[in-house]
Image 1 (cartoon, rainbow over the protein chains, first blue to last red):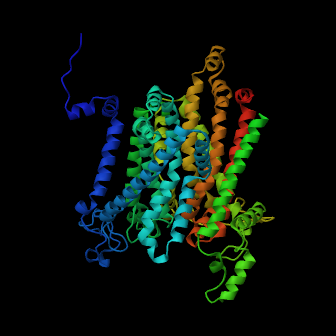
Image 2 (cartoon, rainbow over the protein chains, first blue to last red):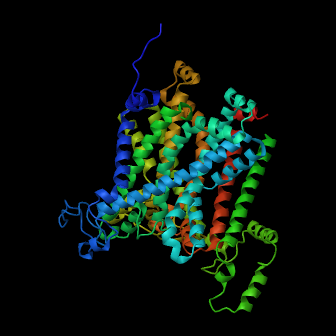
Image 3 (cartoon, one colour):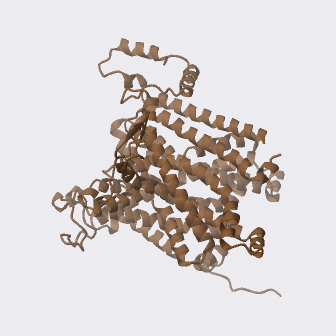
Amino acid sequence: MATTKPPLGFWGRLADNDVAHSFLTTPSAMIAAGIAVLCIGAALLAPLIAPFNPFDPSQISLWDGKLPPAWIEGGQAQYLLGTDNQGRDMLSTILYGGRLSIIVGLAAVCLGMVLGVVLGVISGYFGGTVDSIIMRAADVQLTIPGILLAILINGVGRAVLPLEMRDEFAIYVVIVAIGLTDWPQFARVVRGATMVEVSKEYVQAARVIDLPGWMIMVRHILPNVMRPVLVLATIGLALAVIAEATLSFLGQGIPPTTPSLGTLIRVGNEFLFSGLWWITFFPAIALVVLVFSVNLLGDWMRDALNPKLR
Amino acid sequence: MFALIVRRLLQSILVMASVSVISFSLFNFVGDPVNNMVGQDATREDRVRIRQELGLDDPIIVQYGRFLGNAIQGDFGLSYRIKRPVDQLIAERLPATLELVFVSALIALGFGITAGVYTGIQRNSWASRLVLSGSLIGVSLPTFIIGIGLIYLFAVHLRWLPSSGRGGVIDLGGWKTSLLTIDGWRSIILPAITLSLFQMTIILRLVRAEMLEVMQADFIKFARARGLSERAINFSHALKNTLVPVVTIIGINIGGLIAFSVITETVFQWPGTGLMFIQSVDFVDVPIMSAYLCFVALVFVVVNLVVDILYFVIDPRIRLGAK
């Protein structure tokens, strides 16, 4: 006897699978996702919701510089989190800075992911010499700690550019530097998953009907190896945001004219000794909350999407 | 076993060879070495002469061979900025970095293993839960934020400890140590804690996971049945069997500590090799960049090799399985 289910709508179908069920029954995942969405949403909508535009000189006055947060004596209500040394509203600079950090993080992860997935699938599908070369390259790269490599690639990238273009292209250099350090993780996982898939019958069937290799890789293998990639990408986003902040903090990343969270922390750090703690503190909190929520989300995804990775 | 060690050794050599190619190509990609050595007003003839003296007109493979030969002897040429041999500069700054890494490793291992064992045995106590949630935050906090926080709290607010530098230094036959002065110890506390925190959380989590697994094993049940004391079970039976992964972690730990010392040294203006590296990147001082890259890769390769060999010594199963 067949049990008939009422047909599900779009949202019903979305909620009716193991991943969604795990999500809806894990409070920490829901809270983390909520905070992450809030952070990312607020940052991406920065131009709309920020009370000031920190890049518009007409809205900045040096007279309002170094004001403490609104609830401390001397603070002004219009500058909720105080102002920095140049008189920019902290809340607005954090929103704009967060936007930059998230964009750089996402772009870097995408670059690393595309590179890693492509090389991983090729490596796992063809095997042999191609596989050895790609995997040895990954091994070599993993010998050097990621952040060092990012600093190095970033430094070389900056040095190659002419002086006047450095600030303008700093963002792209940082994205490439972080993306290039990211790929081996993706490549390793995807290669392993591809090797499992290649031995399965559906791939053999596709080979029998003489599909070209690239089509088997793109249409048949790729969709089946994407689950662990999603997990890695989420955790990778947190790591990329930290890497960007670290580079910027070391003075190697995004320039102070268009600050990211890391740049803000670096600039604020110089005022720490004069007691102006809020210039560093609030960007740091924003960064930590962002990274922490994305990390929690990644933790949950690892459990929900792929119990084997645990 | 011998074959395996030879294979690992070959792999290490391959890694070092690749790194040396990257180091070498830095010289050619980044700027013109001649420009970095002569002043603005050098004549054309001078430049041509220097190019020839440096052998920059030779085929690239000959240049690489020369670079490799020098690098193996530790000779990376003169720093563009400071005009002194790079190996000397690194040797001068190495003690500061190694002392920092050493103290951090002690802190990370000491606290990490103790807390790991505790949370593994008392898995449901509130203290364990507190430590574990704390460790999750520790993973999410970037190193430099921990450093800034500690500086603000202990150096700016409480004024207990210095925020930068190395304090008093005593010269022990070329090795300048700060571990023999009170001032030096006061200076090393904050950077060492900053550097150790991330590694500590990883060690803690690993030891805890291993303890939980080992405590389920039959030989622990048997030890209980024999009526051994809780203490004997925990320390001489359980902890001993968690050591294999801990050795791996110590290996990775040392490498990671050296890598992250770049950040910690910048935050605390600690005069070590990491700070020198960042400054060299700022000034595009290629010889230092290239030498530092080779140095870090060498440390990693050697540590990994030693860890692999230690496996054989510690765990008989691997030794027998490799036959």
